[in-house]
Image (cartoon, rainbow, N blue to C red; front, top):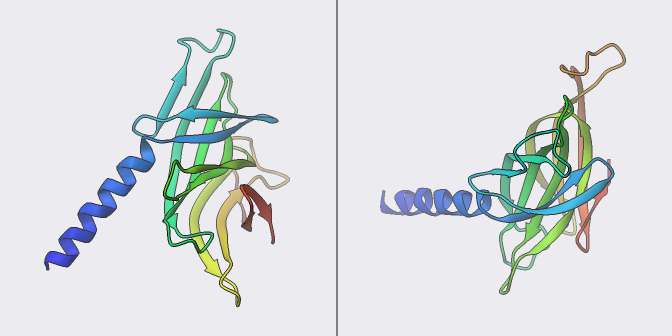
Amino acid sequence: MILVAIALVRSKIDRQAALNAEYLVAISEEMEQVRFQDGKYRRGSSPFQEGFLVAKILNIKRADLNSDGFRDTIVIAATNQGGSGSWISLSGSLGGKEKPTLIEPESLGDRVDVRNISIERGSKGKAAVCLDMLVHGPNDARCCPTQKQRACFTLAGKRWILIS
């Protein structure tokens, strides 16, 4: 019973640390490093201001992606610069003894709905991050994607590479 309690406390601490960390997020065709507080970031007070940005962490998963013995963080984030679009990206950081290494974000699209993050290991132990998503089909309104899609990514250095 004590081991379960310790695991739950550690999990809560890990999640809280991940919600209050820096990540690179995709903004249209660019990326920017932001420091989240409780999973949220805001720059500017109005969408009509130059440089306005709102970002939110939608999902977090922890796993050792590069087999170095340290837990890495996988993040799904949404960004908005005003207007109706919400750009979703796969991001994260690699753990280590020193400061974490930020992973360059991979844009998943506007208003994509990431339903699940899973980690799969190949025969050589290489990790793949697989996302089960709803993306826009040809007849979907921009608000409401309905087409199921599964995309798997692996790391090459600090970049996500689509593998399927």
